[in-house]
Image (cartoon, rainbow, N blue to C red):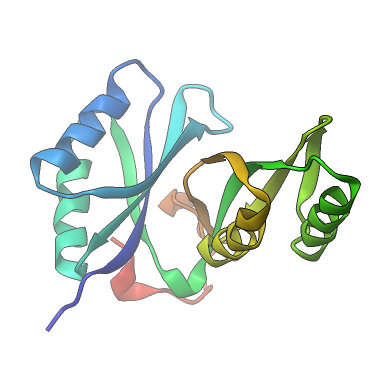
Length: 183
């Protein structure tokens, strides 16, 4: 039996208006809930990279990948192998810090998590944290007692480790193949 798990798709698309809408409509039309979505231009300003995370079985993921490839605006689609992917998310957290004691405690927590303090005011501190879901949730749980004023997450971005890329032509010959997990 194939159980649903978090699947990460890397998709290269035309950097044009309406492309993201078409991609998202494909997912919603098939009944998939997107858990995380991050989009940005690549080194080529005509191409954007979309990182999409969904909860799905392997066969569902292969099916949605196949359907994505049929869209004219899509250049390539790759299912990233969780064991060979680097996944990171940026989280900005604004926390109440009205006393010097609470401010010092928040700074200590930030140091432990290697978070950056990016804004300071009389009554708050804003932290930037980069990491996976567990790191974001752990610091969020610790900061909750101070009072989180605002929190925003970028969505997960991911790359494969080593010399493998989303563009099959740039793969180095002889490097081991992930085989079944790559479409």
